[in-house]
Length: 212
Image (tube, rainbow, N blue to C red; front, side, top):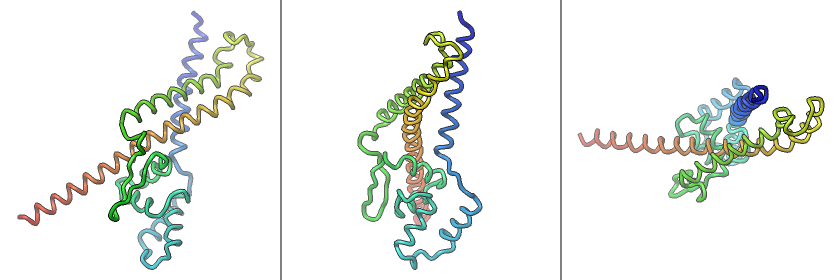
């Protein structure tokens, strides 16, 4: 057995999973000046009379909170009402393409699009895209891991890497991106469910208190 090959494969597997974790954390994170972000959020959310703001100004304020103009004020206002609003807002910005926005009688709600509605459909897609990420990432660095199998000497691996890393690495990133969207969408849906359960619980307690 070629223990050197086994060691390279094991190191590659560890590296691929580590890279997935790092890239995933970077993707769902948000680089910003936290002090300035806090100052603006406090002024806009706590110290501003929103009833006096023009709709355009109000919308831009909420988009500034979100850090993107790809969402509207009503969506952001709703997301901020959920438990752990900072994480929920990041989740929504990342996964918003997976949801339908339903608004009935003034109530806003997020519902998965039809092809994502069943937990099984989301489960197999997550498995598929993470498997694709792993296979593509492995292929991207294959000249380093399997030089003999590819008929390469050590000095010859760099030229193939210039081809495999950009090509397969790009598609590996895309697969990881889809996996991340599905994962964060499920987290957001769970937060929304807990939010409604809490409302029902608080309402029932209030009604019981009035009855006594």
